[in-house]
Amino acid sequence: MTPEYVVGIARQAIETTLMCAAPMLIVALVVGLIISIFQAATQINEQTMTFIPKIVGVFVTLLIFAPWILQKASLFIIEIFNQLPNVGR
Image (cartoon, rainbow, N blue to C red):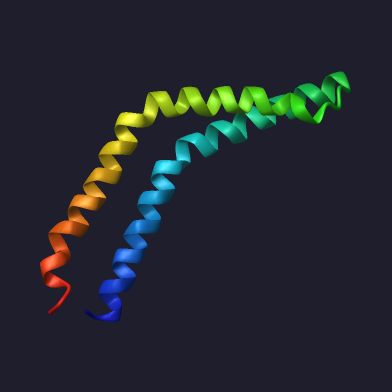
């Protein structure tokens, strides 16, 4: 197993992780930004006000993107398992 091979698998793992987490992170960012603008406009400085909309937004996004996330993660795991016979060489 060469260092390039290990780095390639690590790169694929990081890319897959980021791709799977990106929809939820983007929704949390957008909802947080909208709530922050609302708080600045109304001068309501309640710190807990952002949690519930973010949780709901991330949960809905997870429900929508769950099949895609499972497909991406499954393809990566299957690819890793298919490469296992070549690891010892």
